Amino acid sequence: MALRDDANLLILTSLAGGPRHGYAMIEDIVAFSGVRLGPGTLYGAISRLERGGLIEPLASDDRRRPYQITSRGRRHLQAEIGGMKGLVAAGQRRLKKA
Image (tube, one colour):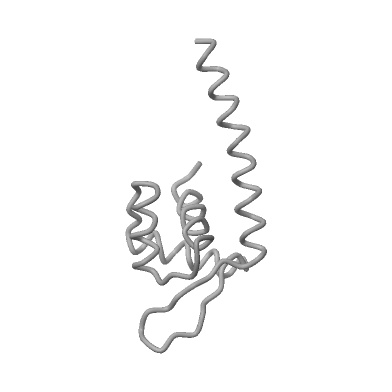
């Protein structure tokens, strides 16, 4: 899986826990995955996810712009997780044979 796809999934996973602005997403992603996305990677992925209708911005009274996952984004994340479960199961079976 490419880094940009990983960034998309990390952001969707973060936002599945509730709305967050960029810095809060970076810190949440580090907390649950140990991966620190750089600002360029984060905001590039946010832009793609927003264009795809998977996340949406919320109103804000300050310069930080919070985002939330959309219902389409939730369905996408669920499908990706489902596919990963199959990959993990296959990997585990094959490692046991080795």
